[in-house]
Image (tube, rainbow, N blue to C red; front, side, top):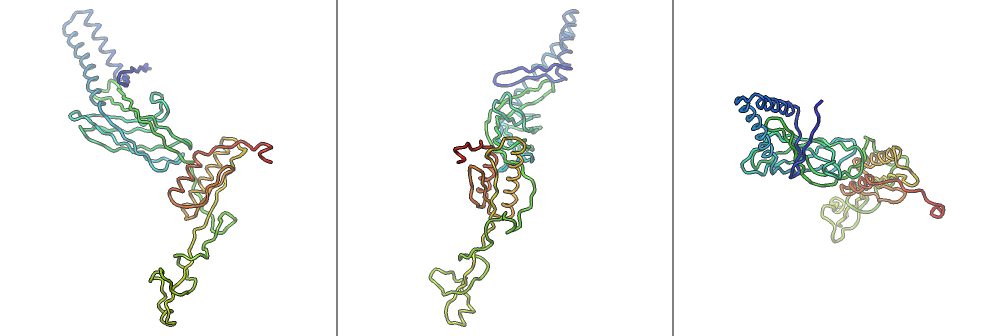
Length: 324
């Protein structure tokens, strides 16, 4: 069992010998000890070459990590338990030096030095001034804010004797939505799950003709019913009923509940209902014991509903006075 040693360098770098590095150390020390005991010039020469390999390894690995820049591209929606691709753009900002065998780890946490890797990507060769796109699959464990601390950039170039790492601070925060299950949207008008009517009796631009009326200034010429107008000798236009999307309100009980698997299962079911009905063309609202979001549609409304469900927490039970 090889003992794990990590040296902290300045600027913030770590140097950790690999298994091959430990073997090389043992070989170097053995040759140096033999050279001191025997006074053999050939052993001194070999010992000098081995030390030169160590110095060269440090210089080349430092050159590979210098002026490496990383940019992160997060997806628009992240659901707990569902893998999503996260893009990383790695750039070598040096003008002459090529970087080899670069590993970039995306770190999550509040402290960069204690952060945990979310995923990693590998670049074999990155030329001077070059950029490369890589991606890894992120699977968030739970809903809520996900804090990103930065990156760990490491390499074993050139000889694989050391793992040299560089920490880059790049704090960011994204929101993980609750996990969703595939559900079938409620049939329109069934069981009280849908609140509203398929059509209203207001005039608008729909597809069902509601009748004929006299032409008024401002009416579109495309609304003129030419056959009826010719028969009556008057300009007549068609009224059309406006078709409205069915509405659905998802209810989530939050007051008097405790956090845990039961509450998380309720949040997951609510999120699944929201996504299923929005994707089916419903206007969806959301009501908890402390807040109500009216039914609406569109990407911004979808984000508002899922953001609320990502941050929602149980509320304390109402006291006697409050209940009264």
